[in-house]
Image 1 (spheres, helix red, strand yellow):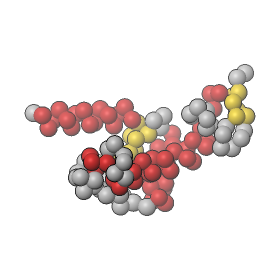
Image 2 (image 1 turned 60 degrees about the vertical axis):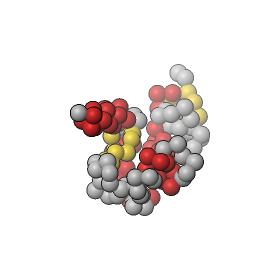
Image 3 (image 1 turned 90 degrees about the vertical axis):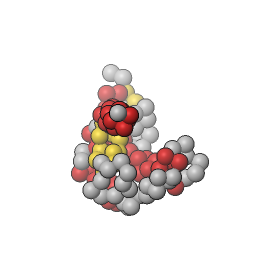
Image 4 (image 1 turned 135 degrees about the horizontal axis):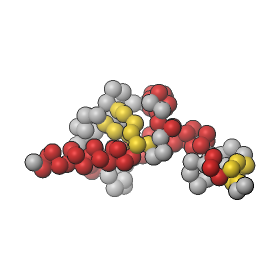
Length: 121
């Protein structure tokens, strides 16, 4: 049986127990929300981020703290998604509790394609 060692918990596990190249499913879920939160902050506040102008120029702010984001991540079972993505229900609204939903990345992409088609009509 092929095994790998998780870079976070240092456990040797079967390859099917890995969510990414380096992290097991358990550790991936513990870390993924932090990565998503940091990327959300970067999009809104870091001028070097390639998506900055799509967010900051529109006045979109992050009004959710890391603890709230983490709670929402697990409450909506985003750790069980293969490729979770954060969706603002009101696309013009801020990142705030009540306006956020975790979706599978492909589902999120389809929503944006439909919104773009509706704007073009």
